Image (cartoon, rainbow, N blue to C red; front, side, top):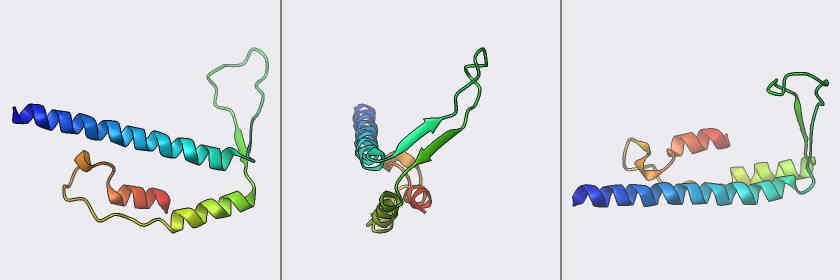
Length: 99
């Protein structure tokens, strides 16, 4: 029975992590993409559809500055109480990503 409870808690935790990440990505993309232009270079006719092509993203500097300010203002939680990712993404990983 203890194993069943542990699996259920792990599944709920994984679901919540995914839901929070999706919500954050959705709200961040709306913020960043409001005045952002994304363009790709066109591929020549008959070329490989799986070839890597250049992607250019042009965002107003004001939006980038605001995003940097918000990331720097992040209030980080305390360090995890376990050495693995059972409590979510490790604090050091998120801080490295933000840096």
